[in-house]
Image (cartoon, rainbow, N blue to C red; front, side):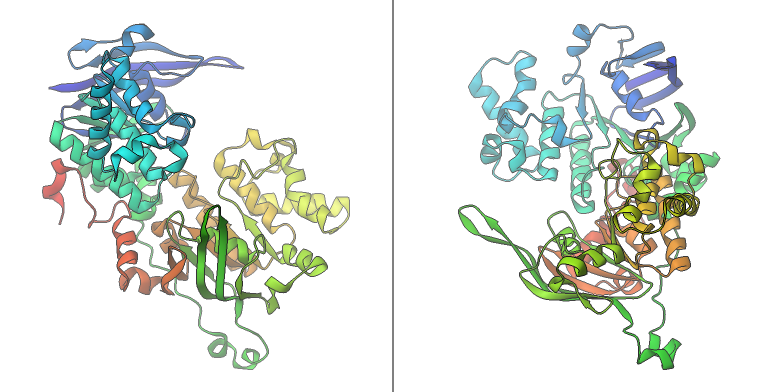
Amino acid sequence: MTALDVTGLRISYDTRRGRQEVVHGIDLTIDEGEVLALVGESGSGKSTTAHAVLGLLPEGGRIEGGTIRVGDTDVSGWSDARLRAIRGARIGLVPQDPVSSLDPVRRIGVQVGEILRLHGERDPKAIRHRVIDLLERVGLDDPQLRASQYPHELSGGMRQRVLIATAIALKPRLIIADEPTSALDATVSRHILDLLDELREEDGTALLLVTHDLGVAADRADRITVLRDGAVVESGRADDILAAPSDRYTRQLLADAPAFQTVEPRTPPAPLYLRDPDAAGAEDPFAIVAEGIVKRFAARGREPFLAVDDVSFRVRRGTTHAIVGESGSGKTTTARIVTRFLDADAGSVTIDGRDVLALRGRGLRELRRDVQLVYQNPFSSLDPRQSIGSIIAEPLVNFRIGTRVERRDRVAELLERVALPADAAERSARELSGGQRQRVAIARALAAGPRVVVLDEAVSALDVTVQARILELLDSLQQELGLTYLFISHDLAVVRRLSHTVSVMRQGRVVEAGDTREIFERPTHEYTRELLAAVPGRPSHTVSPARKELVP
């Protein structure tokens, strides 16, 4: 039986230029128990399509044509009041962001129970028992405790499980999961997707999986529909599309997805004494040397939290060293100590022979010129009131480098180097895409001529094609300028593409370190093997039950 049938769906939005159509005649069908992955980049129309099914288009959005059938029921043109009757009961929604989707001032149990109350359950005892059962079913430990807690007391993975509990509370025949793991670490993402698979297998529920990640689609979907600019460019069985995509855009998505890239891990350059014996004695081959870093944070009423515990690593000049780990592993804290945005409680850090942790005043200011940081979110790190030209020139002004004309010329040079048009200098950050904003952040980091660049999850918020272009840019800049990168990431597929060496962190400690090739081909620590197994698109990964026979 068909769980969802969408035919000729057209959607428009009010814009400053008048009403614009953004979804152009989309067709899609999902049978009961099936997984359909709706794949595309930001702006492709995939989330808009999913929200239209539920009647949850944002203000200004409107369905212009087409039909939407949920089971045997045509819900096209239904009012919001009528659609409320099927939300939760026949279609469950797992939204993308568990932080904004949960009320921070209401307890978890109250929020999960709300869906039961909205659909007629009035017995508080029955609601409480059902909530505990749901939290237990989605794999939360101590469900009674979790029901009494607030969202901020739960991890990201726990909050996403709460949203899944809400989505399955009324046993709907269809679940729409809108980028349900995009904000989560790889191992947590795997557990969430495994959970959705288990629930679907038990109840025969259909799943519309909205994602920009073809690796996730490859692992989980029976069929894939690829969207671009609001239109379907390709649709069919997942294995057929992955093996022989017919559309150029789909081929590009596959080529750019880190999990599917066939590029070999980067090999570190030969040590200096092998390349240039005469220079080896005069120059330290390492740009960064960290030894025994320790950092504790005070915790009210408890022992101080040990965030970084005896961390050591070395980074050769002109190479990329990745620090990999899940949220809470200590990798970002380590990076902030290296850049002296945090002080360490013990240990040492030297950059180009300077004792970073001992620097004060002028010495620390000079470090800021030689070591630059690129953040994860390019929008929040760029001043929306400044022009792009002013943003890039800011380090030149701060360090009093060049005249006004020379700074303007330097900005033009940097824009060209990061492949942005010259007229971008006059725009604001709001007028640029996510990938363009990240290029601006990289240009700003390069402005003062640093030798070391620290990249803190600098590509994790980007679509795969944009991410691939940024990684190519970072690679070419390193080769042209001899830059040294410290690359902070939870994504091993990206790390494999960019880094020469890797340190794997867990609970504040380095559990494994070495050349990227060695780590990927012969991991020795169980945690590293777990991280590698969680990379979507790898053949060892769990797949949709309907496709298990396809796993080698």
